[in-house]
Length: 425
Image (cartoon, rainbow, N blue to C red; front, side, top):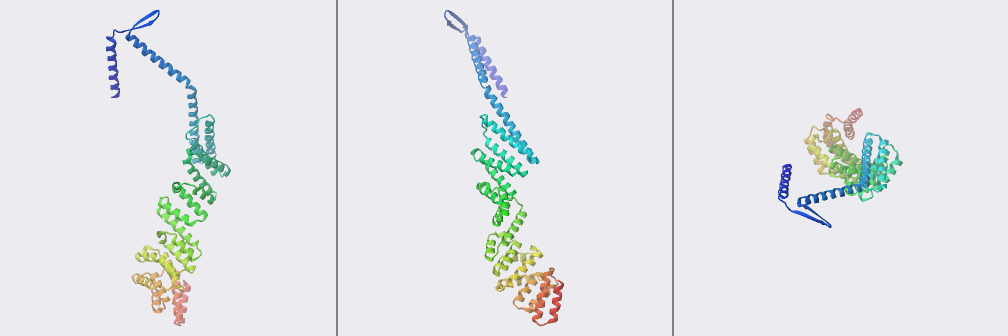
């Protein structure tokens, strides 16, 4: 369509020119004393147009002639830019392929080419970022070869190059690489310093959080490591199962690092509700609290969500977890101020009566009755649980409890028999 329009316009101009020139009888007279030149108007217009075109072509040719040095400089700059880009790609390809010496040499070639551009008086708009990236690539290659001197030299140069506004966006990458290298050198303190210098937005990126988690683990900052794992799980850097597993391990470590009841309480308060409801975490906290003469009522309060989970869904806990829960509760009942209150007596009785086939609950009910000196009821519950107990330690303790009650009744024969059965376990 456009070509047709151009042809129609061209035909219109030709027709108009033919009509104008065909009936034009005008003349133009030029007086050049002592001469006189007469010519038709059409010829004058043609000469005028030809003179304009000739002058225009001459001026364009003169401009092109004077621009040859500038074009030559642009051509040389373009060739150097192409060489820099080629060297940069070679450095990246060598680095990912494991050819670290070649990668470092290619990165240093980029730096030397950019410096030659600067010496020639030219300036690249992205020169600072190019130099920064080249120094980082050279430092990464030297780091892979354990050449810390060369790596640190390139790292400092990359920091200097990234101080300007042109390369400010690359500075965050330089700091992250510095933190990574410091962690690889087992220098978590220096890595944490570089991470603390990051802007708030960059510090919440997945890579920065991963590095902060590693640094916190190396420095033993368990609360910081736990908080970072939560953020990584929230950002889907870890799968849900992996995040929960790591958080569980850190929570247990945090509790084990406490050395008195106050520190244990502080560590427990630092956990979120989901972590407090993890059985292993609650068991560890309650056991540590009781081991450091903490309040048994507090330990039972921590175990209450686990108990409710077990009683609501019988398969919610494994046998080992149910046994450990009963063990911790039993330890709390054995302390001077650990006698079960009415609420826990009701919970245990309801659970035992609701699950008569659960040997672990039968054992726990027997322990409570024994602590309350209800000897007959305790003996009955212990004997009921013996036929169903699968845990050897609980079976042994059940026989020991029966032996103690037999001694109180002064039934030596029954006590000796119970002791022999306990010894077999």
